[in-house]
Image 1: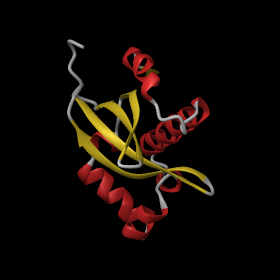
Image 2: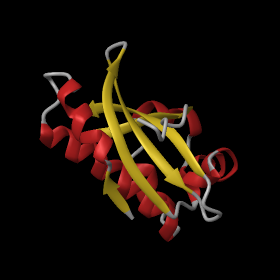
Image 3: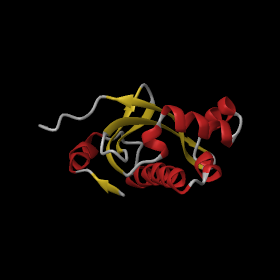
Length: 135
């Protein structure tokens, strides 16, 4: 289940001018759909959200699925995800997402997003520092 974080409302002011609200909604939709595809066991659908670079790197949906299952088990079987800030770093857009796994552990992940001719794609995912709950 995705929900919009209250922290994100304040951070939206910091969005790059080039990123419209529609872009943010599309980016969140891509990430949510890929997470939903993993939950449903629909690897081919999840694969469609990977960038051409990621697809070239892994070569097949099966190799991609193996990497996600082994390296990102919280993404393979998420119980919940929440969107935090979308920001620009070094000319790239990064969407911070908090993903909760089946045991209730939370992980902060940065999704590197690129726009292609066929829409927004995920160009990589890295672990990020967890947000400070006191903020």
